[in-house]
Length: 288
Image (cartoon, rainbow, N blue to C red; front, side, top):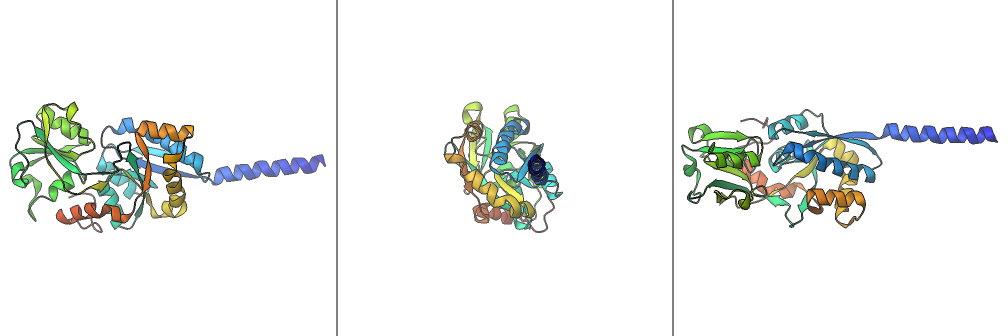
């Protein structure tokens, strides 16, 4: 009898070990509109929340991209399973049919979308069109739908940025704003969520896009979405009503209410920006 009990215990231990070994490790890339390194701890908390609700996930390994081009390369290389992404990169991967949108956060103020705004020194006239950039220095994030891509969409067909203005590439939207503050640029084109007028008393908003894009969407590779997409989406969508310690920590450090589902249709304005900028998503190789 003792031998039978011992064998049963051994079988249970082996079964548990087998399940642990079978759990997958997911690799996510973090893009950030502000300071990428500062975003790391936030996503570590979110990863713990997702793992707690998804027993099939053994680990979630996070890689912080230093800028948008690096994030694109990481996802394109198939080294990662998902990315909390800006709308341009997400839209390109969706159009290429190699990724699917899962969900996006809703900020405490209810916002889940953003748009491009144009920032300049106080006293600058309201932005009237691409002609206002002629001969000027314009700071923006490369491959940003509220940065480089938005501005390219303002250019006459076939005209290169350098023939109109001097691009000032910035690793983040905040760095672009600071370039105007320091005098390194005449204009910054950034996402409105990052622009905080009270922090920059010498700067003003002089123009803005009319449409909006989904903010910080989690996209997943087709393979990862097939296996875990619905499970992760369900867990993210219940965050708002979850009062557990892990859930409350995520909501507090992200300053969000929760998450909402995100579909291809939510990228309609982003896709319009593609057209204005003359971008064919199917063939676009993340450089101009």
